Every structure is written in C-alpha cells, then in structure tokens.
Image: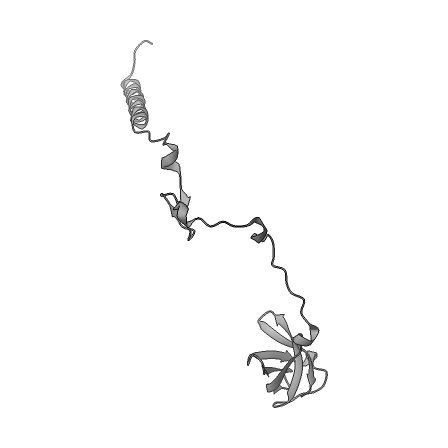
Length: 149
C-alpha cells in the first residue's frame, strides 16, 4: 500500500511546477506594479475647445461666467401671434382621386404637403390659398386650408 505509482509522481511534479510558475508570475506582477501613480500623473484637464489634455489650461484665457447667464432646462419660447401662423401660397399640384397635393409657400418658397381632409373647400392647381403649417411624420403639412388671396 505504501507503493507510489508512476502516474502519482508525475501528477505531483506537474502540481509543483504549476505552483512555482504561479509564484513567479505573482512576483513579476509585484515588481512591475505601476499602481499608485501620483495625483499629477492621473490628472486630466479640459481645454477651451472641450478636448482632454494633460497640461493645465492657461489662466490668462479664463472667462468669468455670471451665475445668472447659466440656463437650465429648455429655452423660453416667445409668444407667437396667431396672425403670424397663417401663411399664403399657391397650389402647385393636387390629385383629386388620391386626395393629396402640394402648396408652394409664398414666403419661404417651401413645398408643403396638403391632404383632402384639411381642406375647407375644393381646390385645384394654381389656386391661391391661406393655410397653417403643422409638423407631420415626414415633414410639414398644411392644415386649415382655405381659398383666399
């Protein structure tokens, strides 16, 4: 029973070799440890353009910002006069069978989509119309379209 086989000796040698390799790696990590850098080595700065830099910013380029000038949240919108929402345009295309067309805005020269459901009366190509603009899924849509001057 006290007799060791050849396989046991080989396994023990392999285990001992692995333990030694592990210990050597541990010692190597300890000697090449670069943790514990100084605060100056770890410091990063942001320049006036928003880029990260290793050098501190020039104090002569410092800008003073008043606390009142900092705006948090969305910008306040001015109250829009309802008369400014009404636009004028000319119908450039209208397909009665499909029920849609386009109006050329006279002020911005944009082409605005119009659907038959937004018409108060029937229109045809070349008619002058007044309308309001609303943002749709694919761009601006004309709503409350009326024939007018």
